[in-house]
Image (cartoon, rainbow, N blue to C red; front, side):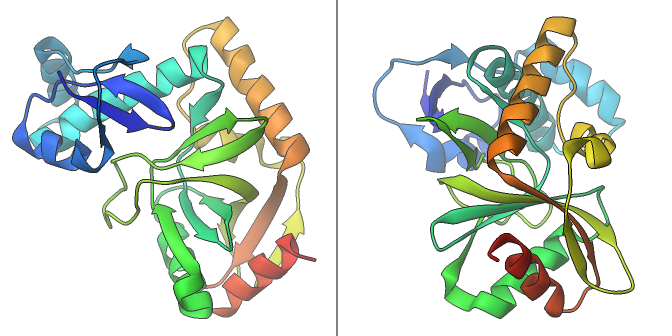
Length: 234
């Protein structure tokens, strides 16, 4: 059974479908040692398929099962969590942007690419994992990158996290987690137990004690990227 390196973990996955195997292929690693198994069983696949009401491909359905297993296991045992966001690397540091779907995360990160050109590398446009590695929080890409399918296999230390809201003008203010708590919870996979919820809150507490958190009101124009960058790099 193949082993894939995702979020700096060796994860055993036995794909049910060829398209899933192809999507996972950039993360394939040598050796057969692994930290945990995140394979989707046929029963889990069929259960997720029933919930999708026929709107998803087999690859998307299997991917959802696998990513959910990874997210839950990373939270319970590996000091991290799933965090729905579009994230990019600039000068060796990661900038993460979260918001409800349709708010404009991908449009905003496109503006960073337009503004900074080749200095920007997209990490993941939709479904990264946050993990504490070597005493610092990193954002780690996963094989699942949203509709745009933009990203690459990399892990980058986090410089700043932004909660995006649409605005008539571009404005970026430092925020406390309690001020954007609803958006932060909506960005992750909510735990099923009180103990795991405690672990998630502990991660948020430590993360935002060490990483800048911003509330970004933005328009679709390129100036929004400059405003966001300047706020994190005063």
